[in-house]
Image (cartoon, rainbow, N blue to C red; front, side, top):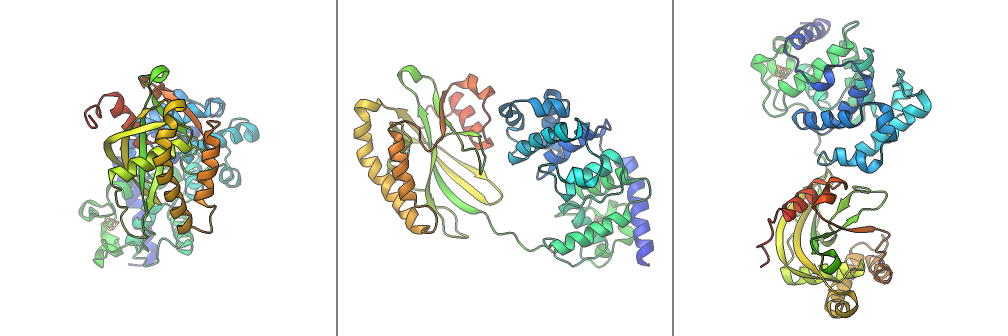
Length: 422
Ligand code: SF4
């Protein structure tokens, strides 16, 4: 079998299979470039089943580029809540504004302009141009590289930029004339349904006859992929502070800073207990020092609260960090009369922790100085430039939380931790 024949076999059989087996997905029902764009952004790192309800709700609330561009950011994040990788939502909205300003609200059709949109990389640009406008552009992501590595028995490391370039060239050559829209979706569909990462269904695969990887018995060892660095584990202490007096029935939350991880999302106050050594799991801290440290951290943020006991454990996995959370129920204390009592012991624990973290990272801004600054700002209640709010269950509808805090708060308001610390 020659390479040209192998390529032809792939394109023809894959397309034929797709036209019969394609899934009916909401973004495929209309040929709307905006829908294609939103779906492709949502599908990054996220499964189709998870995306469908989010997509329907998002399009229901922001049916056009203009509606998205003009919506308050808080509302956009709220519609993304639970989907993770929130910078995708912020970039999508920023790009919608670009489309309004530079292209009169119409999705651009040239590669350079699509690529210039915020949050749009080579894969997404290729997907938009091919699916929305039927342009013969490759759309190569990890799934497509897996399929091509196996079918053409390519041993190159797919983490390398040079391999991506090679794959893009190859994928571009495979697109049958005038069929970019269907072919690129067919390739994605094959990777999602048949040529899956761990257990490819070779026996039902439409291109199995000429698949070099299968013939060589390499379908399980391809693609070649160097391992990404394991995520850094972090043990964090979380405060579920129950309000008293004017704040009775409410819980303290704070908004994250303007930039960085989970920018502008809301969360329960938390503090790093101890960074773990590389490659090691983070170890839980014993309750007593944990509660002292947490009280000190809250105090440094301008709040007097007494940790009462452990409510639950939780975990939040990012691509580069894993947070292991020890969640403590705390009660708000009277600032004027009780703050000094709490502060004495707690502050000592917090300062000691801050100093040890500063020692561990001497090049970075010292955590001790951060602690000192936070302690100063505590007097004005400003924390570290963060915004705080006492919320009840009704506020959950308005503020956007990362998944882990969303679950903790929902459980809390449902009474799940009522007995945990009694
Ligand atoms: S035959 Fe197997 S390895 Fe080859 S493309 Fe199909 S599912 Fe993947």
